[in-house]
Image 1 (cartoon, rainbow, N blue to C red):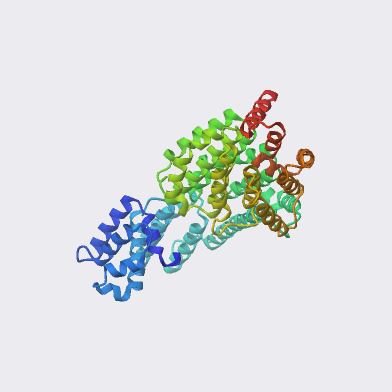
Image 2: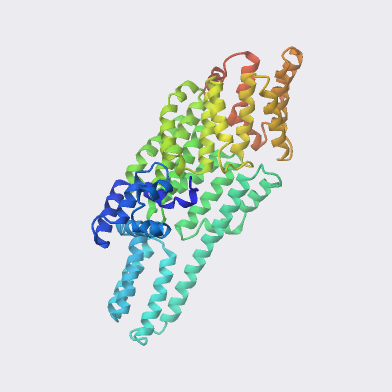
Length: 520
C-alpha cells in the first residue's frame, strides 16, 4: 500500500463536492480538447477508490501512454484540479475578489492604460479598507507609487509621497501588533497544552506575565478588529486555564459579538465563530447554566444557515466533532450515560466519514469521551475498546492532558473489570508512564494505591483504608486547578462515592447534579 504522502490527488478529489467535480469535467473539456481525455478518466478512477491503490491504477491503464510518466501525469492532474477549483470559487470571498481586482490593475498597467488602472486601484483600496485587509492595502500603496512614477508625477499633490509613507507606516504598525499578539496567543496555548509535560514549570507565572503585558493592554483599544479579537481570545484562554470560567465567558462573549458585527474584517469568520460558540456552550454547561447552554445550542444549530459556504470539508468535520463532543459532555455531566449510548451508532457513522479530516487531538478527545460514557453506563468491555483506540491513536501527544486522562480512565476501567491478569499490567504501565512525567501527583498516587488495594480483596481493611484515603485526597487537592480538571472530567469524586456506597456510578452522578441544582 502506498504511503499517505503519495495519495495527495486522492485526498484532494475526495474533498470535493458534487458541484466542484461537475465543474472539473466542464473545465477540462473546455481547456483540454479531445473529449473524455486521460485526465478525466484518471480523475474518475481515483474518485471511485475508497482508499488509494496505485498498483490498481497502473494495471487498469497499462495500455495508456500516460502510464509511462505516471508521476508527471498525477502532478498535472493535481494542478489542473486546483486550477478548476480556483476558477469555480472565483469571486466567492472578498479575498478572491481583491486578488482578481489587483490582477486587473496589473493588466491595465501593462496596456499603458494608467488612468483606468488608477481608477480600478481606488475601488480595490475601498474594498480592502472595508474589510481590513492590510497586506492588500500595502500592495495598493505600492501600485500607486508605480502609477505616479509612470506618468512622471502628473496630477500628484506635493505631499503625496509623505502621505503614502505615513499610510504604509500605520499599516505596518497594525500588522506588527497583530503578529505580536498572535505570538502571545501561541505562547499561552503552548503553555496550557504542555502545562503537565516534563520540564514545563511556572505555568501560572507565564500566564500572569502575558495577562499583564503592555501589548495586550494596548490591544484592548486597537483600531483593528483582528487585534481586538486576539486581545479577548488570549484573555479568555488564560481565564479558562486558571479556572475562572465566568471571566473567560465575558471575553468569549465580546468576540462572539465582534465576529457577528465585524465578520467582514476576518478571514474565515465562520470558523472563528464556530470555535467561540463551542467554547461558550462548554463553559455554560460547566457553570451549570442550563438555560444559557440551551440558548447557545439553539444559536449553534442555526449557525450554519447564516453563512454562504458551510459545507467545506474541514468545517463539516469540525461541526461533527464539536457538536458530538458537546452532546456527550452534557449527557455525561448529567449522569445520563445510557442516553449518551443511544448516540453511539450515529457517532460511528460520523467517524467513518470525518475521522480522516479531524486532527489527532479531536479524534483522541472523542475516543476518550466515548470510553467514558461506556464506563459510566457500566459497559466496561466496550469502554476498553474505545480506551485502546484513544491510547493507540497515531500521532497522539503523550504529554498532553487528554492522553493523561485516558491513561487514568484506563486504570479505572480495569479496576471495574477486576481482571487480576490485566490489572497488574495496567498498573505497571501507568506507573512507568507517570515516571516520564516527573512522577505521579497526589491524585495519580492515591488512584494507584486504591487500584493496588483492589487486587487483594481478602485484605478488606486495606481496601477500606485505601478508599478512605482516596476521598481525603480528593477533598484536600480540590483547590489545585490541574487536579480539579482531572477530578471534574473523570468525576473521580462521584466514582469514589459510588465505591463507598455500592450504588451505581451513574446514579451517584445524577444525585450530585440534583444536590447542586437545589443548592443553587
